[in-house]
Figure 1 (cartoon, rainbow, N blue to C red):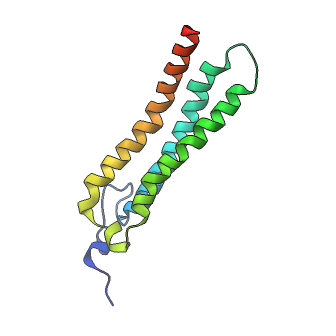
Figure 2: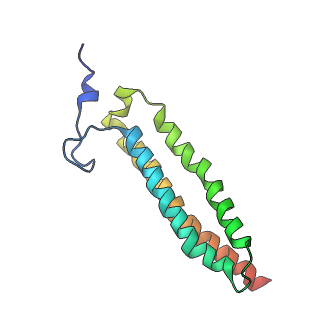
Figure 3: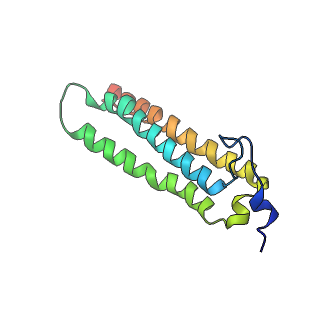
Length: 127
């Protein structure tokens, strides 16, 4: 039995020419990489803001909470794509929806640490 036509489509911009189009895998990769970037930015941006001179464990606890708090949001994006069947996962018509979710994931991963750092700085300045 032959696979549906859409499952046989190949996409040339998926990283390496000839790789099968699979939105599920691409979103899973996006979530994994953006979580790494988010965690790194939390360590180098937000944690530096929280550390100060005190040397307490509070910044480390805050880091764990901030990372653990964003995982469900990233997981939400991934779950939406995991539900696709094989034919849907290879449907080029989903490119726009994929790009929207991919952009939202990266905006959170990059923007949230800087936003939180700004909020923490503002709180320190006001307090």
